[in-house]
Image 1 (cartoon, rainbow, N blue to C red):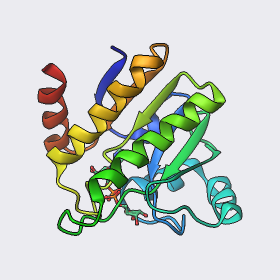
Image 2 (image 1 turned 180 degrees about the vertical axis):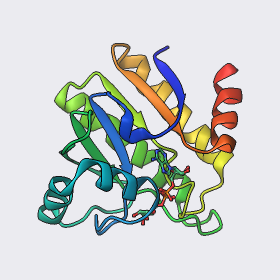
Image 3 (image 1 turned 30 degrees about the vertical axis):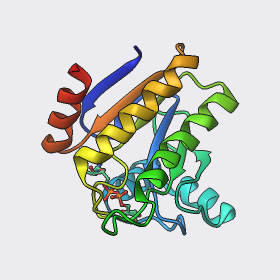
Image 4 (image 1 turned 45 degrees about the vertical axis):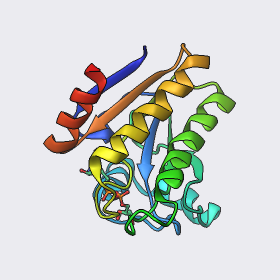
Length: 166
Ligand code: AR6
């Protein structure tokens, strides 16, 4: 199976796609979003402004500016609100809509950060289960695509390592 686990900074990834955990205004922010805009330069924000926004669970694609990746897909994960606000479905659809863009444009590699598990407060283990399940489902019909999970913090990295072992 073409799932790869990496610990580090997603802006360094040389995959076709890197995914940004954005907000619905595509306005930039802290965390991985801030890192991507800082490293990629102002062209990415110019395209985000033209697009204007992205609803939770959806995804849009822009240039990668100065980054080594070919394109950035910006997706908006849900804010964790206790678990009764459709958070799990919305996180799954964020992952899935990124993968649908990969399919549509025939990209061959994509790197995901741990969407929603920072400022948005989604429980990390639940989020990791959803991410891995969605990736495995996609790979059944797209065995030529490589999916990288790029974990920044030790907690997420250890969680993914354990879940991927089984
Ligand atoms: N590379 C990979 N992962 C990273 C990096 C990096 N350079 N930096 C942080 N992370 P967060 P969210 C991890 O808060 O929870 C922004 O302000 C981090 O350890 O970036 O979806 C947006 O504008 C965590 O595991 O995203 C939104 O307003 C993961 O990235 C809001 O935060 C996600 O944490 C989105 O919140």
